[in-house]
Image 1 (spheres, rainbow, N blue to C red):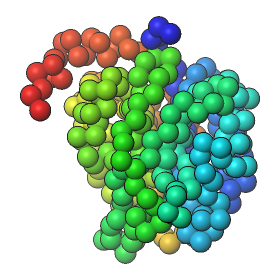
Image 2 (image 1 turned 90 degrees about the vertical axis):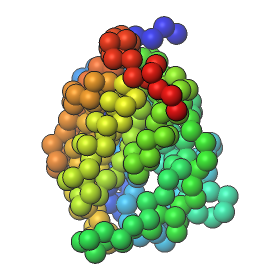
Image 3 (image 1 turned 30 degrees about the horizontal axis):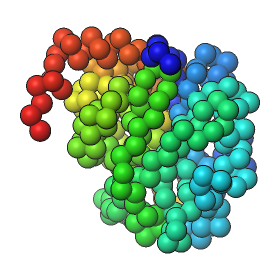
Image 4 (image 1 turned 60 degrees about the vertical axis):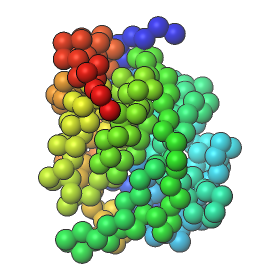
Length: 272
């Protein structure tokens, strides 16, 4: 498969504990994005559920076989003829979950799965306490996958604060990196655009970041929104507003990556 310019879409939504509504919202957005020309659609982290841990535990599904929620994800890829890349609550062997980024092709087959390596354990100034490691088992291995535009690196949300992972994905051939997220409003105001643009500039790669927005109805959890796509020069080329269920679409062009890396050979000059 030759690499070619490809239209991709990032979804934006506010997931709650209502799985059926979350899936219905996602299905509607994917359909609209596909009708707008997107070949690949990216959904946020935890797009199927944000709510009490006890209820989430009941909803976990093992991969690669999955269950009814995962089967619905496969049907969304198949029915719309798109690559579907999304964050998913996967049942882990130790009884916890994996925060997993999954790539399904247009036939619904799994092309790749990345289990989030870095856990978000933090007490925020607004009183929000998030302890991801309590219910989530970290992964260990960086993962890349193939899309029509070329090689995509898979990461999830908090990973964005660890640039070494992104440099490694570039070494594996990535020209674009996916970051499905539910970035908190507190940190998002100051860090979201800065971190994402920095990763794009450092890696001279596209950054594709689908995000949650708004109040999720669980433990004062509020997400920042601003789903966006950034080009390898660090320019934001598509973006959703801070709030609202929506999608944004842009073209991933491997030739643009080649030109940027040629004109400013920082990756070639890298020593470590």
